Length: 58
Figure 1 (cartoon, rainbow, N blue to C red):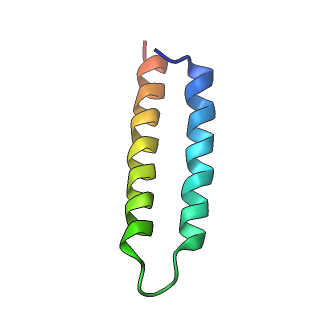
Figure 2 (cartoon, rainbow, N blue to C red; figure 1 turned 90 degrees about the horizontal axis):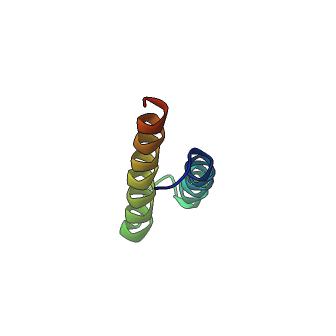
């Protein structure tokens, strides 16, 4: 299992990647691959956040 520090680092990386993906999204006519990238990143972000909360809750 990853350490809390590793998970926090990955969470920060994912946050930056999500923000970058959102910047690439046009206001109209969002391309499916860009939207898929965003959804995948957000799903991983949620998973890492759950892992962090599980470690803190021990």
